[in-house]
Every structure is written in C-alpha cells, then in structure tokens.
Image 1 (tube, one colour):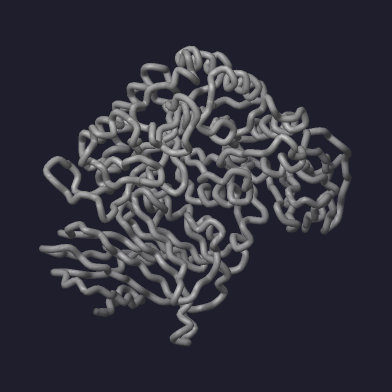
Image 2 (spheres, rainbow, N blue to C red):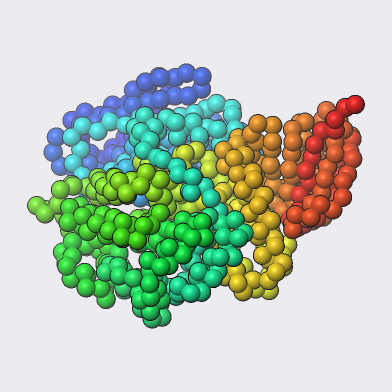
Length: 589
C-alpha cells in the first residue's frame, strides 16, 4: 500500500501493509542546505510490517557512494540491485553519503535511530527513465517488537562541501540522541603490539616477554594478549574453550608475574574476551541451557542471550574479576556483532528483563563500562568493525579495523572509514603482519597505509630481520613524534571511488600527507611531510604561489639522503619508495 506525504518541499512515498493508528512525516527544519524531517507512528496492537520511506533527487554529477561498512564497494547501483546499508546496534550505522566529483557531497542521508534494524538504500531509477536517483529507508523489517509511539528523524544534507565533512556533521547531530560517554585514555593512542597473528591460539609467557622487550625498546606502549591464553595445549581454531576463563598454566605458569613483567617494560596490558561465546567444552556451557540466542556450530560455541540478567551478571563479573585480580589495563571485547536474533532464538519470557535484544546489548555495555571504569578511570576498551554505530561506540575508547592480515589496502580503507565520523575514540589499524623474507620497503609501505591511525602490529620481532626492525622503529619514532597531527588534525580523504589515493592530516601549520597513487599534491606554504607510497621513485607537487622550497629527502629507514631546492609551479620530487620529503618554505633573507 502506497501513500504520499508532503513535508516542506519534498514528497515522500511510504509503502507498508501496516494499518497504523497514526503515521506522519513533517519538516522540522530546513536551513543552509540541511533538512530535518520527523517521522512518527502509533500502533495500538500487534507488530508492524515493513515500512519503506522513499524519495527522489536529480540524477546529475554522481560518482560514488560511501557507507560505514562498504569496504571496497563504492559503486553507483541500479534500482534492482541498489547500494544497501543495513544497520543495527551491533552492526554499522544508518548513514549513506552520495558523492560528486572527487569529494563533494551530493547528498548525505542519516537516520536518528541507530539501535534498531534500519536499511538505508541508494539507487539509479533508470527503469522510469526520468533522470532520477532514489533514496529509501526501510524500518521494522522482520522486527518483532510492539510499536506504541515511535518517533525518529531523517537528516538530508545537500550542501556542496567535502563529503567527509558532511559525515562528521552527522556524528555531531547523532549526539543529540546518543550523548557521548566516551573517555580516551592516553594509553589508547599509543602504538600497540598484539599476539593474534604471530601467536594465534598459542602464546607463551617466556617467548612473549622476550618479544615485548624488543617492542618496548621500539616505542610500543600497549600489548593485547589475544585468544589462546585460556587454552591448555594446542589451539583448535574454534571457541570450544571460551567460557570458564582460567589462565592456561601450561602457557602462563605465573600469570601475575607475566602481568608484572609487561608493566616493568613500561607497557600496558589488555586481554581478549569474545563477549557472546560460551564454548561446548566448558563447564559453564550447561549452566546457560535455555539462555542462548543460538548455537554457533561453526565456532563450537553458544551465543548467550543478554536479555537475561543472569547472563549480563556473568559477563560483567568475569571481566571485573579478571581485571581486578591481575591489575589489567584494558580489555579487547570481541564478537559483539555475533549477538543477533535467529529462528531458534527464544521469545521474550519471564526470566528476561529486556524485551528487545538491542535494549539488552546497551544495558550490558553500560554495566561493563561502569564496572571497568570503577577499577580505574583510564581503563581501555577495544571494539572493532563492524560495531561502529553512534550508540555502541560510546562504550569503547578504541575502535579497530576488522581483521585483514597482510591486506594493507583494506586496512587503509577501514581506517579512513572509521576516522570520518569523528566519534572521539582512538581509531586503530588492524594488526600488521609480514613474513621474515619481506623487503624493508614493502614493510614500510604497509606501515604507511596505517599512518593515520594508532598502529597495531602482530609480528614476532625476535624472528624479524635487522632491516625490518629498523624500518619499524623509525616509523614508530616518527609516528609518536607526530601523533597529535596524525590523530587530531584536519583529516582529508578525497577520491573515495579510488579507495583514497591520498590521505592527509593538518594541524597548527604542519601537514602530513601520504600518496598511495601518483597523484599531485598541492603545496600552500605549510610545513609538509609528503610520503611516497606509490611504488615509484618520485612524486609531483603543484606550487601555485611559486614558493621557494627546501625539500629534505629521507628513505624508509629515516636516513636523510639529500636536499632539493625548488621553485616553480610544478615540482618533481625525487623520493624513494616508502620515503618522504620534508618540504619547508625557504626563509627570505
């Protein structure tokens, strides 16, 4: 059933089979290119069916589409296979940005409700042949909740500004609905060593402490002890033994001594927990019979149901007890996106105190955050893609790119996508990984892909070559010295359709840029460090004011090679692969 609603100058088409008591769309504001519309509905009995809200724009100038979880899928799709962004409390965020040219915003559309399932779509309406594109927001799809009085807002930003500015402005708008709870301890913005790729499920106290001594000397300040610390013997690659949470003495014969050893190196220690999983081989598995959302057969674990207060108490007590007992500095809370409803999920019953899963996840995270901040105010909590929405990120202070071992392009894309919303948390790369025979230049290229995040590595340093360690130490030294510019500067990420061929950040007259493809950078008189991640031996710079420039050239080890004195409108810089040029405006006598 279709019905049209006129709100301001727009006409919205609404499709639904639900007979609402009341349904409306009205314009709340329309100022300086930003339109806000309120939607509301009342349904006195039963469950709503899908509600699809659709509208049109002119088909002109559009080049690509951005969503928080698009990864490399930036294409403009047709009506029969649109760009679809599905979001929920544990997955993604209700926003889609359509881009014209290199970076200009065509329209950035966002929805205020980020804790329920929402489907946001964009598509070309070529079937009608009217030179139109369409936007669609779908609510209540397969959503078994009662709607008594639902209200939300749609935000449409039509300003011709960089799309990443439009995305950042949406985050500010979301704070009206999800006030910030975020605190960012100093340790969450420090280079981090992880045990995941280099040890997987087989970390051991002696080998790890030896490697951490090398990492600490290089400038790493935090370590995450990932999966395997709780498994005696060889790991299974499954999660059968997640749930009892006793330290495996065969790997860590004295865990307190290990913690103390990490702290003695000047490092902070975080420990991994997969939040929803209770493994089939654990003593606690039977304890939660009847309190699982579903069975994750592939991982050999049950996914507990946080609608039960007993489940939440178990999880909060587990994290608080472990953290207090050993003096931990933080936790990596993994797999939150595995909380979801399945056909086998039990209906709401008397043992639950939350009607919806989304409500229970929020309650769980609030309880975890309160308990851990009660231990220490600067306690660190890491989340990862794809639980990246404006509600859920309030409960972490570190947000990491999803696993992409040895794929630095995916890492770069993920970093830019996480940086854009400006949630106020520390954005981390996924852990870097390379082989023992890798060239130092290729190691440096991986590092340059994660320049604009807090770098994480997962490399067995004691088995790395001297050249690999020298490259890594040089990068960590440069990154640490410039972290304020890299993390808190004005971040720019043009040409999304080409997967960000150049990224930059600028603050207080200092700009750091990395060219990943042979694109031309523009020099405007600032102090510019320009890195060459193209694989070629030179880069071009446009110098429209024809400043006299001194460019010091460095290689990937940090060695100063030579100086170029330049003047002219177009300049060619001889920069080695993975090296950089420090451009400074010449001082006039």
